[in-house]
Length: 75
Figure 1 (tube, rainbow, N blue to C red):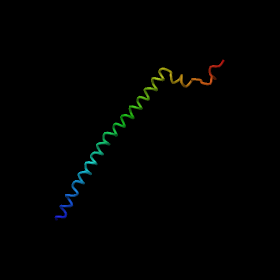
Figure 2: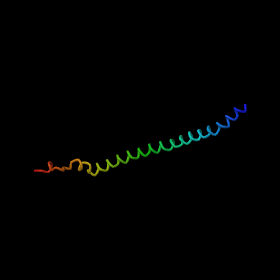
Figure 3: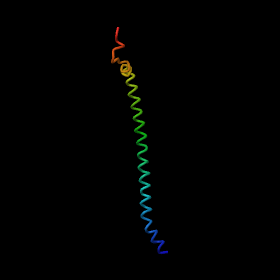
Figure 4: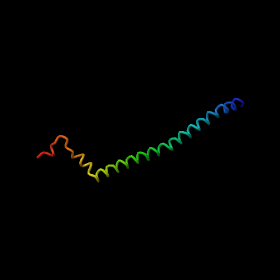
């Protein structure tokens, strides 16, 4: 019985440390995953907003129709 109680005394700190590590990993994942999802969603939203604004200003069309060689403007 004494050996069993010694083994339990040895194992208790290891068990508690492992339990703390699991809790910490869960907490980190619980914070990082939502932050990554929200930041990627915001990035997609801002990209769409930029495209919308450029379409309103026709800057995207002007960029697409820019003729660097000079084929379109010749008469």
